[in-house]
Length: 623
Image (cartoon, rainbow, N blue to C red; front, side):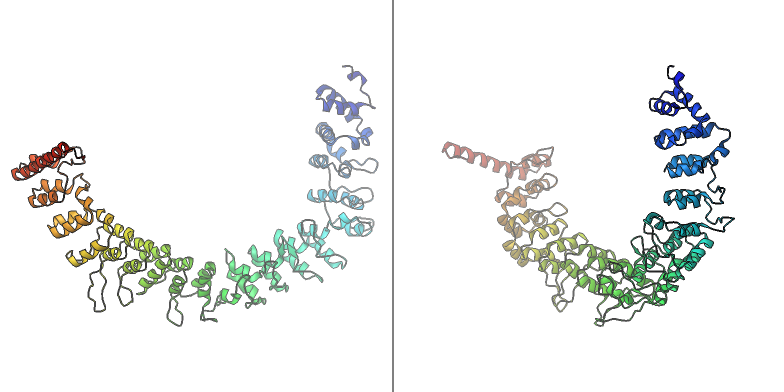
């Protein structure tokens, strides 16, 4: 209350600032009313007032004053409110004034607009503000006929004003008349760029997209069409964004269509490699003189090999080294270019002069990506697919081999070598473990024998070949899938070879039906083979099958007395229970089946075994 009584014209602005800083609303309202009444008295003091406080004060003033338009456009001591705000760099206040009807095109007593007055003061930011808010640039002083150009010519311009580029602003506003007026002046630099690197022609081409204005600038003497924009040349940028109109105009006005960037790229290469390929762009560049003999950056391929006949001037004729553009593109991994060549007739199954297909060349070179590309685009699998697959497996290119198999490659066809081996036999012979397992998993014939030159089988199956060469992990894989030693399952000579060469642990491997070699010998009633197997791998007689039975348990269940006696003679354990919930010994199983003769033999053996143990114990011999 004490401060209220001390408010007067000398201190009200100071008290308003104090009230605003300390959120004293009532004091701020009271001082604000005083400021409103004596507004003109404080105009010189506003320059020292902090911008936020001045903004609120002006905002309050314009919000409550019913004479708003008149006050916002009243000239006091040769200064307008908007002009004062812009001169003091108070853009927020200037915006508030414009929002409340301040006239950006107001004319003073001399016939000049604010734009002209601020141009004399070299106020670039103020000029920008006025232009952005609709200031008229074509105004002429009625008495003298002067326009902005006359005032600019008669003013000592700062460097900032010279960099302001009025021509660029005229282009931005698409003011054709002013652009023409500027271009007629030989002193105007049509290539000048602003701080953002924009020139009048780049603005016309890419921002306002006014080709008429761009053509006017390009036709002006001294216009540089190879000027840079956005870090690259105009022609490169036009191709990059796919602007057909801009490329056409630049080509017509003789822009350098063979100019290279710092990375060595020419416009034609950009057009060809674009994700959104447009043949019209390529035609414009070629018609304008783009060289098709230049080599692509980081490559030995010329642009001619990138182009198509008619649409992109493609030629399918062989180039040096008997390579076509299509084969060059595929083998060098230029798959985007290869796809474009396919669209205009390139042959995915083309062959070189020696009859070798492109797919075969890719496979032989170990180019997996190239082979996959060709297969995905319909490359034929000829009778030589077996050789292709062999090469792929040799290089461990399993992904491409998989595609060959999925597309119908015959894994069981014999190769062209004298031994007439299948791919599986070749993989085993060459020691290609992963390749052999790949073929087995893909369903090749795991029992296919080697054929001799007279188409007669030598009897060597893949399993036998693995055992001969000590390839036990592959042999195990074959056994697990039911592979047989030979097609006829009857060749003691082969068995003798196997037993003399194989690792005993291999004989313990079960096939897909859960059978060991001893089980198979039992089913075939082949005692000599069984005896040989047990001698090679004694643990076979104690091995359990998937049902938890040993071979003795199986023989008792089937009442096979001969095998029971054979197994007992081979030291089979008659006291061993089954490994299933029943836990039955051979004697229990015999009792259930009611075979007296089998039980007698088993009991006799058990009594003999117990007597043997007692004798050993009496004699003090440790077991």
